[in-house]
Length: 159
Length: 302
Image 1: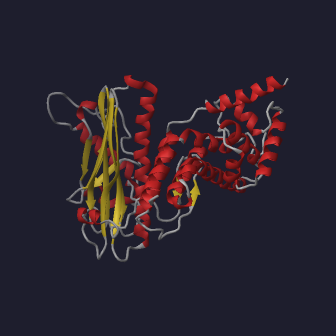
Image 2: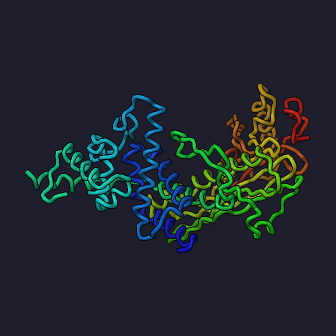
Image 3: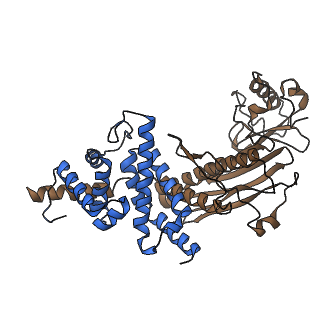
């Protein structure tokens, strides 16, 4: 796959999946300004470091990973600039949206939250999630159980 | 019990999927893509660090970024150059991207400018300054586009809107680069708006109206008084004075300006800014003797 073709696939997918990428970014940022910064930076990185995508079949997963990493960097930076603010603090949030779901998600620690979102809302496989977050499969499962437990949700089917 | 809780997760999923995503998100992704593509010409010459700028919605690059394309890479651009040589450095403008849109009742054509530079030893300040300038212009253009898209989103086929934006180089000599972006926005009536950017090629700094004058001078008042006098002495046609004479404080820190071929300062006002719409955009030439005493020297103006 030539570099130009790869770049085209990446940019097309970016523009196609932008709502999913934004929502994922938003789950970390908690306000739209920061979420927009994260997606822009992610799009930039996706094109710039396109050579990191080995197989175009996995472009969506690869993009999730970039957003995840960019968001993590962002949170780390925010923590450094504003010590004392927890990642699941209400302070940075937009005021006007009814955010029951984001509220519930906020109860979770960021990495657990990621796993829950990717598994149940974005329907990624456990293996994909392990790729995206660069953790092993068992860790991903633990996070999922912990998240569900925290939210007090039980499933009929196994994870 | 289990079924109820499972539904809970489904509800959450549904709420998550319907969580509102601002229109701007797509535009910002496009910006990220454009920036990375533009940098390909530089060939990773510069490492790039970002500062997260809170609440502005933009990322500000600490080092050279965005659209400073080395002309050595693209021969088509080289042939298009019209810049005046300074030593061995050429500065010119290209259209980085044209945003076009055509829908039932709306259409848009927006040229996004980018300054390019070529040369053997490009002064660092100049390169950084151009990069900065490009970013400013990019942000401005994307805001315009985002507004257009937002209108369509909100009003649908009832938008009846057309957007046309193009740019010109107003000045490009050894000292100063001035780029003017003119946008015509039509929805019902037409509104013309202009934004003029200036870059001092020696220092690499963006120049605003304030920078032309000595610190602590009352340049705003002086310019405003002059403009007001001009308006009062309007002496054209039977339709009467089109200016908003009851207003004052026309001149602001961010008032658009350019320096014409006679090295005179010209103030530029958008439609509706100082006069009725029918009068169109307004320009006022400020004679040198009006402002000589408060000009910062050396000056582009003489």
